[in-house]
Length: 113
Image (cartoon, rainbow, N blue to C red; front, side, top):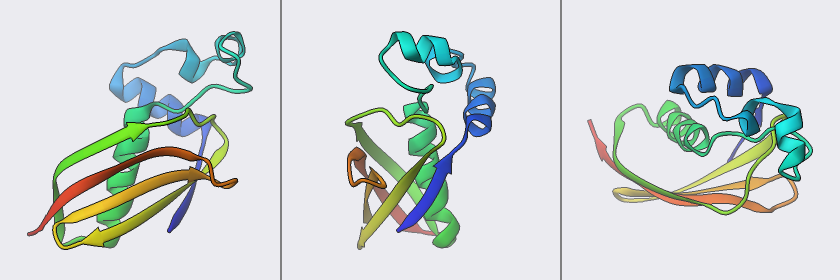
């Protein structure tokens, strides 16, 4: 299990790199209009972060496929818990809030390199 705070700066950097500048990710007013307290993280940022965190702890593995379903948005400056469960060539991943709400769930296919 790995805890990670999703910062506004990380979201700004991801938005610039991905060119996904949708206001809901960057602007508090746009987030408020959508019924949120703060801007939300990009789903692809969360998926990429999950992969990066896993590979950092398993440097001899390579992700060959991935699938993730998003259940709810996560607002910036929130902590996300990444929980991994490996089973041979598959790794299940669940992202939750500190309160235990599921944000996203999926799996990676991995192989040794």
